[in-house]
Length: 143
Image (tube, rainbow, N blue to C red; front, side):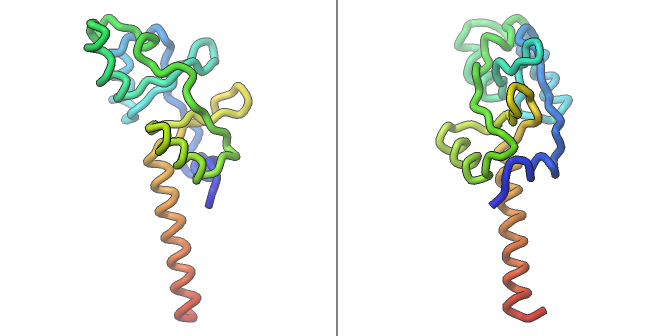
């Protein structure tokens, strides 16, 4: 199986991030505009959390506030689980499944180099299986 770096080579290293002070409403606008389900929360080039649709859906009302007034820092998941480009796809799948998370920031030391989602991991696995099946079919049929 592959590595996180293989996903990033295909997907790219673009990262969508917001500061911890942004309101949940404005963060949701960024998610909509960028068509993503989660944002990295970055303070002075340091990853401090992740804010996802799930964080919004489960926490805003419970805190008794509105999305236009509550900062992402009050809703985000602090200190998110991260991976490196050398993390295996199997390990990512295991982390995401066992920890019930959908996004993994990719770090090289203290530097954010990308983000992968559960969709990226599933797509990679399906493509890899398709490739193996095609090669096995060619091997069996001699074509």
